[in-house]
Structure formats: C-alpha cells, structure tokens
Image (cartoon, rainbow, N blue to C red; front, side, top):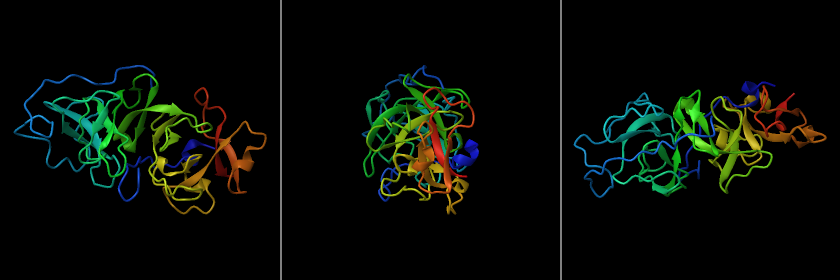
Length: 282
C-alpha cells in the first residue's frame, strides 16, 4: 500500500480556536539571532513609520521562511492568510525589541496564526492554548524545504504546501511519547518519521470521523485517505487505526473487518519505525 493511498493528501495542520480547542537533520542552528535595540512602544515592538504590512499579500507568500528575506527589523513567519485558523501563508512581521529565544515562554498577542509574536528571527510562538496567548518559542526549519535543518532532538516537518516548516520532536505512534495535549502524527514533507504536534480536535477524531488535518485524529489513529476507510465519503479523508506489524495478528487491531494492517511507509522506514502500520481497506 503506497503512502499516497494510505495517508490523506490533506496536510493542513490546524491551530487552536476558542470554538475548537487546539484545533532533516538532527543538527543545526536554531535560527535565533540578536537584533539591535530600537525605540518602541508599549507593545514591545520597534517603532517604525512603515510598520508591519497592514494588508499582507493575499497570495499568502510575501517572503521565504528559509531565506528570512524580510527587510529591516522583520522576520518571515507562517500565518493564516485567509483567517481559517491554519497556517497557509508567509508574511513579514516586526521583530520585538527584546526577542525571546528558543525554548523560552512567548506571547502571540493576536493568537497563534496571526503571525505576530515576541520570538526571535527564525522562531515561532508555538503551542498556544485555546483562548490564550502564551506558548513556547520553537524553531522554524533552516536550509531548504528539501533538506530542512533543525536543532538537535528535532526534525523538520513541512506542512501546508510549505507554509509551515517547523522543527518538532520525533515520536513513535506505537508508543507515543508526546506531551499531554499532543498527538504523534506523520512528519510533513518527505520525512519518514512521526512528530509531536498539538491536538486540534480533542472532542472528535474517532475512527471514521472526517479529518481535515493530520492532527485531528485521536491518539492511536491517523488521518487516512478516504479509500482506506470503509464508508468514508470525505475527500480529505477519515481517521483510521495505527497498527503494529510485529503483532501476531495485526489485522485484529483494525476497527473494520474490511481493513488489514499494511506498512505505513512504502519504502524502507527510518530506524525504529519498521513495525508501524496503518489499517486500510483491503
């Protein structure tokens, strides 16, 4: 079973909303750089006659997050270009006067997908809970989309057609290992691992439920293509069970008798993922 059939093609990674709660290399730099101290207002951002873009490019891509090619004291960050609570564009955003560094607490005053926070260049305020503004500065990928570089213990996961290249810790869906409120989901881009990401649908995401994003299925499930889940009519796919190929009878793990446990990865998986399978219609 090819991953293009097993895994849903929709790679949107959703952010948290008040309505729906918290809806590759192993070495490299964090991308954090010092900035000059400039005069600013009470917002904590530099005073600038031009200010941040008041009307970001409607195409959703006004800069390159890998190149960090924004002018002046600005950084290129993912944001929601159309207000749908997913990171689907890239914009230039002002750097704060005293930017927070990798791993430090941060503030996203306009919410997680607005593209405004107090993290340094190459970082994003990640994991902002619903109805709140505080998260942790997390590294965006450096290098290129094809060969993303990240700090140690994390890998580059590229989601949403390149709009969200973020460094996330790895996990194994058969044992998880993610923090509370997080899911172990397939690594975005060409990666052959799983990574920890925020749970976008803690109240839904059971077997057979529609999933518009990889992080909208319950722990132990993944967002599979419609053809892999009997009765699924959603073009974006539905949630199906992760299974262990090393079990004596892995097919018994599946929720539907019409499904079998097949290898999750078409080619040789990364070390540690040899037994990871997914339940798919035979």
